Amino acid sequence: MQDRLNEKVEEIFTSKETCSREPGGSPARLHDSRFVRSLYLVAGFVALILGVVGIVLPVLPTTPFVLLAAACFARSSKHFHDKLLTNRITGPIIREWMEHRSIPRKVKRWVYLLLVLSLGSSILVMPSVWHQGMLVLLGVILITFVWRIPVREPDTDA
Image (cartoon, rainbow, N blue to C red):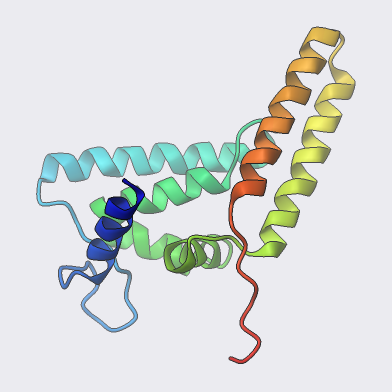
């Protein structure tokens, strides 16, 4: 199943029907249906809003929502997809994921640091041991999830 998924992703990225016709443009392929494009657009904005909210909320991850927004915009709007790809913060992370299915080590370290700081402070202010235990469990699950995401070492010969 993973092989079929990888083949489909490769087919989408190598298709001649991309949003951007100029070299180096985004490898996004718009959906044929206007209705489905509008659904993707709404889902992209919802994911982007959740990603922005995830910057300040300890239990809401930012990066997966930004990646989901990029995927939705790739199927709905060349303009918003290119905006995410050219953004100085989100662009490198999205391109790294699209090209290598990994995240940079620096980003992963920031994720660990922010998870520990935000969940640690939340655990300290929770009055109930039950809630503290739930946050610890949630933290372990999130750290395990992030730990499983591959990291690609930067090219040294480039």
